[in-house]
Image (cartoon, rainbow, N blue to C red; front, side, top):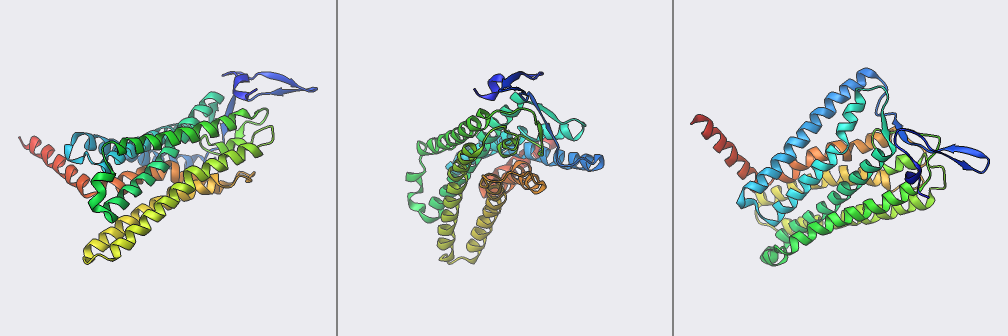
Length: 330
């Protein structure tokens, strides 16, 4: 029977395993990013600033793309989905981390852990798929401009968005089912700062090989496959751009591709490092440092790289600022 059916919030349930009484875990204790008080205060300030910028930046993009009718384009439609995913991704993790910076005992209930993993995997994997879809959109816009309106239609874009969210839900369902099917008793101290399947597997009281293989397989589907699509799309974009006569156009395209690839390296690279090592058994400090990139840093960078660098979005933001300035003068 799945361990989460045997756990009860606020207390521990005991069952007999042979001759021994085994205590199922009802809550977990995080070690966090640091045990030093001063370091935790500095990290609290840093994470708070980053989270504030993340929330404000993504809310601004969502509002702007919704209000300005000129931004109701396929690319902006995907940007709105990406900003919403970033907002959910950050708020599902960082607020709890901020609270844990200020308390001595960093605990979370079993069901709280399960809920955070479900949301984290859902929006995180959806974001992986969305970035791949956006790179395909740019490929069509640059390499097949005459066919863009017939390929990226109002019927196709919602289906691509739905497919991204559906893939995130599928990966979340599979990873969560396998992870919480394992029994957890006795050990409840996790050398991490938020809820993540690889960190939890280290505490399982049973063989984790099948679960690790399932997580690895889902990683191939949601990490390696989108990365391959992104790299192929950008390679074709760069090949097309090289043939452009305008040096300014080439420079702009290379700058955009470079920025997008930086996000891929930070987000996908760190995710691959964490989820594509199924046989890793030992918790390491570097694993926590690597996860900071895709849980904290990337959601802040995405609005800047994918939205605020977009010419149409910048124009709409400038017009909004001018209207605000004019209304204040009135």
